[in-house]
Length: 114
Length: 286
Image (cartoon, rainbow over all chains, first blue to last red; front, side, top):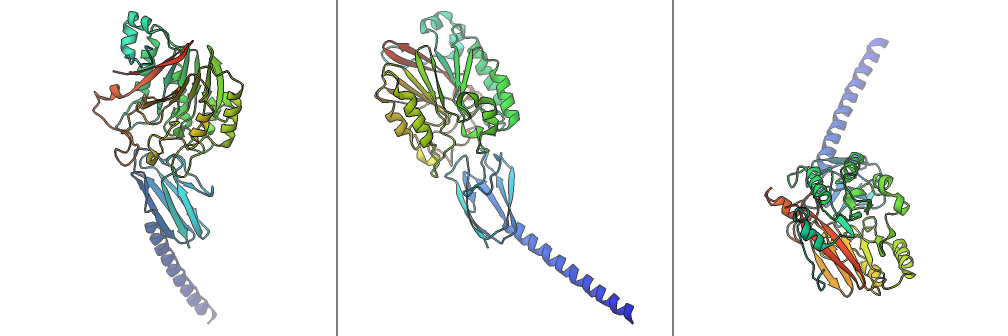
């Protein structure tokens, strides 16, 4: 009797794990979908973004003039992004992050991490 | 220089017409700007070629200046390879000294590591310094590492204090040449075409009889004269930019390929000592 019980428990655990994995994938997919910023015509778009802690945000520059992605607090700073280059940063802590372009500092955006 | 009137001539013409070049005299120095080595987009797919063409014209001038000043944006993206390529191209210039200031494209890492590795010696890695040549006092300023939130460049308090001290002991009859990357007067604030604390710097310079203030950054010529101070921006050797406010921002401007050489070029400057007067000559590649 012992073995079938263990086997059943194992199968239940396996099932639960796969459900957890599926929901984790769903979360990641949702986060990735929401977590991108486009740089075009000397503007961050959108200019304000709200994401959950742990989300990786991707910036992509579409201008043929380079831009950088720099946090006011000095937390992160991208290299100069040429046209179609991307930069990623993972926000681990909740808070409000002000971001600007180091080459054109009048380009600004706000990232809110919940 | 005739009665304070600028006399533009063509570099190509100067190189081929010795009589005219001789009448024009030997320039004290040459200004080259915004070479943007590494840029390869539609506005100019080969910026190395247009810089090379500029250098060929200068080398062919019968009366070559001793100094070359590069007013920044040597590279497009501050990459080591781009600095190496630029240095190799500029080493072909047959002038004895090359003096530089950084543009914002040369210090995109925030600290200017690659720029200062190559050009930091003159300034102790600060980007601002001064030197004398033929009785003229040259002042190099760095206005691309203390940007204001509105996009204007700035010198910062340390540099302003240094400038005040650097000028304080000098006779007012000394001709002064100031060079920086961004304009030292506000040409167009929405695009950051200016230096927030330039007025403070200019207040130290008003007592001098002849002051020439040169910059690049806007890839086109804009000049103004204010008292004894002449302000002048240089063309790029890489690509033109739109006139102020024309479009979403100061993007590379794509023009028909036969028009491009007419929008690229260099500036040469003569300084007469007594009375002190500067003559600026802008030349295009075509």
